[in-house]
Length: 337
Image (cartoon, rainbow, N blue to C red; front, top):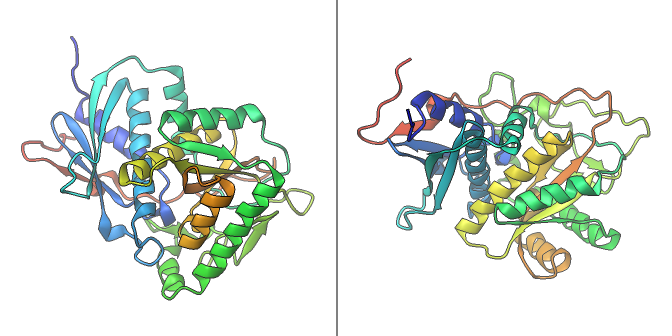
């Protein structure tokens, strides 16, 4: 018997994995609208950060990551996806419509889906062990397949320009009215929370790993990883960029970020998205002009590296129950338990 669409329990299982996607401050700013033949990704603007993300770019990146997690999960379950991005220009909350077609899962799809439960945003110090060029090349290639550029910043002078922009953004945001209040609302959470940044997932106070300043979250309680030498080189820094800066391009950048981070996780690398330098117009422009030579629009910075051997895994970030992220189109019913 040929199956033309996945059964409802398969769809719910894929969405459960999609909801593990990283999002700015773990806001999870998306909803899923399920129909008989398709899955629709909707932006949830009630979860938008009004001060940190006034133009909604971080929200779009987050939703793009969830979209790619969904596609990866479905591919591993035997379903190829066709995506229509921004399908309804009159409705800016409708970000994607996903059609599903049966196919045999590939080894890569199974490996990437297997990385989803193990991917964590790790804000701790990395070791000084170098990341092999082949690992970075694979991250770059897979991001390219998603429609974005992933640029490893390896030249020392260019890296200094990037880390200077990161420093500058941290200072500017700290002085921005409402920034610390909004950050406190979405961080310092207890383990009973279902969204936001756990206190146990953030380092206390302001931290600088090698040359890289990390965002200071409210009430952080994460213990630092011991490298045995007191400092690291900041990990590898990669700039994710797109040739255009329209909503579809930003959504694709989020998809590419998902692929890059899942690839890093599958390779055993710890990783962390750094959105702060792109949330400030001046530092985003500096990165575009000085790091990317004005050729592309930076959307996100990724930090990747090796954790010290003895470092425990970071706490698992909370997620909302799958059922709370789903609505159904008329004529479509929830599956029976």
